[in-house]
Image (cartoon, rainbow, N blue to C red; front, side):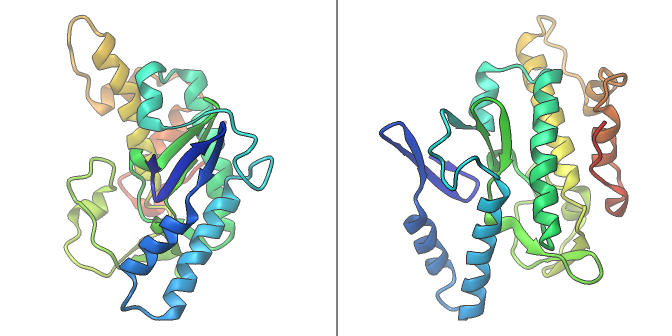
Length: 228
């Protein structure tokens, strides 16, 4: 299965990353680029894998691994799961940012769920180095139809394009709202569809409300990740 930029397979009840396929894909995509750029992708992969902070240096301690999309099919995105989602990604994202990298944006297909308990971003191709202005520069095109991209990316029409390194937090807020809406749509017998604002207001008195609300701040430089 492919989650984010990782090709993951299972053999003898143990999960592995098919690094050869990932490396071959990188070589095909970068055949006209210089060696420094290839080394940068290797660094991105290493930072991403290290950010998982697993008990071992591989996936041998993992019992189950699925995409967030598949997880949603059989699991309600309740308060307990939201708490696990935020705590997992808070730890991982801080690890990445401490190494002077950030993320362009996050799609729901970029997140995997380990043992129904740990949620991790897993697309090293979206890791971009933070410059001295606390910005990242996007040099690759992206699909503006993606529902999880921040509004500043939606409005942008040029490449390269620089944004605050906190821009991607909007994606996290959008993904949480989507997960909440997913089960509301499936469980609501009145078939009433609530807006993102209405969904968020339903959780106004939960401890994570302030976190999500900050993710969705219209100003990217004012978004931040704080837990309560």
